Image (cartoon, rainbow, N blue to C red; front, side):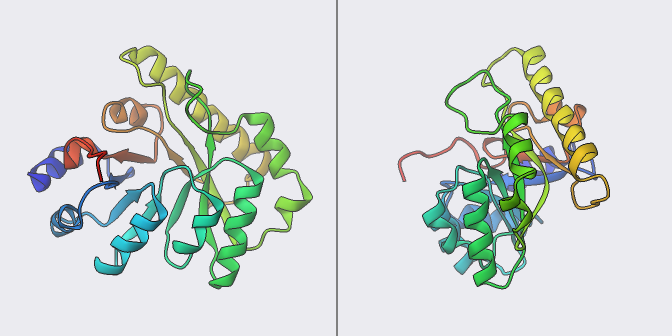
Length: 223
């Protein structure tokens, strides 16, 4: 079933958009099934779970950390994580930089923005992002690479609201690109859209979509 689900999703995702299979809470066997169907990019939101899966699954998998990252957990993924989607503070970015340096790596990161009408979601606003990017502390970081933005829309059936929130994130991306990353070709990613709203996200400029339940089925919160 996972292969069939992936085939259906892939048919709706353009070749210039990266499909991240959100595999959090799913067993290794499910990830292996997706891998066997050609999927190579997986998203996890718990550092220890990601580490454990990384240790037993094929080495060519790209691991994206998509959840709220605690600074004391970065060490578990710093040696292999491909992209951290949810940088929402300078202190977190500094902690990632420190662990990346220990592993002689530069870790790609996205800045997470709060675009939803929900207080439960994390993220920066544009003023906080500007303050971060203009700070001396940021300029002294050598082992992180900011390559775009990430956001989560409100959990709602109101497609117009979702579309407006995605438009907002695209505008934030374009503002940051113009003001801080104009000559930086690696600043190119807009990670937005999940199982229920990724088609709207793609229409509004997403370069990465994070799809879980439409691939693996309903999430299991009991493990």
